[in-house]
Image (cartoon, rainbow, N blue to C red):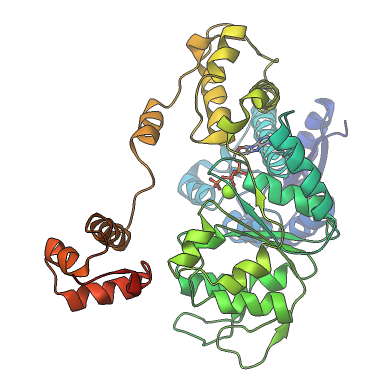
Length: 454
Ligand SMILES: Nc1ncnc2c1ncn2[C@@H]1O[C@H](COP(=O)(O)OP(=O)(O)OP(=O)(O)O)[C@@H](O)[C@H]1O
Ligand SMILES: [Mg+2]
């Protein structure tokens, strides 16, 4: 392992010499800078792992130098050395990002202890950053399992991912739509280009448009600068629009234009821009129903769903649970940096007896909770805690209807009970016959000619 580097920033050459020699004896590499200018230079060129900074220097103070150093590389920890009279200033420096301060005259041994701590903190931070990167980049295999459902899906997806066409991924929450989208990108023709994802759920149409298409300076209040949209960022790569079923009707034609003409406009711009992307989209909604309700354009649907991919719910492939559970456990143990933990056969049986409304996400969560709270090095059924509330809610509710859907269904029911007699249905509903005709037409309930008035 290369030696870790300490930079001493101090105009007292004798002291710098002494501390450098001491730190080198302790196995570190040390160099020094006598003023702010030299310090900035060394910060850029040698990238130290930690710095010890004297409060006052010939051409400035720690308070003026620190922001400049942090601009170049904010991750390097800084320890401030200060005289007893300027502790307030040292505290000020800590507010600006210094990690520690020591008062002069400092003992060499104390400086070494503080330097060692700072290096330890820096190493931990860097490892966490790396782990986070690896965690988000780790490629997940969306086809774990041997059920017929997942094998057929694997065959289909492997075929279509090689082409460049848009793909719509459907499935309940937690079935792995995001995992699938990444896999398709990584195994498609644009694997070496960008993968940009945006969750459209809960975004207002204005925000969605600026995120996707970007805007010109002054396009709206607050647009102080021209901003590129995600489509430009993803040029030549893949755009993954999660929850596409939530995209506002106003925005849908613009998406269609991107797919059909490879053109779009910044908000507030009059010129079209060219962009070349592959679109992957996902939704947990029933898009057919969205189209019937007039919330999703059928032309956009046809454009993105040449081959529909529907991810099976976990309860439809219970035989895959052992493979999935063992895989997820191995991953969780590695994330938590603990030795592998096994499942007892009783635990496996319990996993296979639950209905998993939250699908693979819920399976992962149940296993993670069990791992954290476990009492031995094997997980038994007693360690597994299922989300009972979700479970009972699932049995007690079909998806909630909107008020309009309730009205439509109720009118249909009354019409059916009255044998299609509009007079009698209108009287049951307590509304004029003309209003009922209007509603029948509005909801496209069935052809009015099949109803009678007597
Ligand atoms: N095949 C898999 N292997 C390992 N982990 C998986 C797999 N599929 C899904 N997961 C895990 O399950 C969780 C949910 O996956 P993902 O976010 O892709 O689901 P989703 O269908 O997009 O859910 P939502 O509809 O809520 O957005 C994630 O933690 C993911 O890592
Ligand atoms: Mg998702």
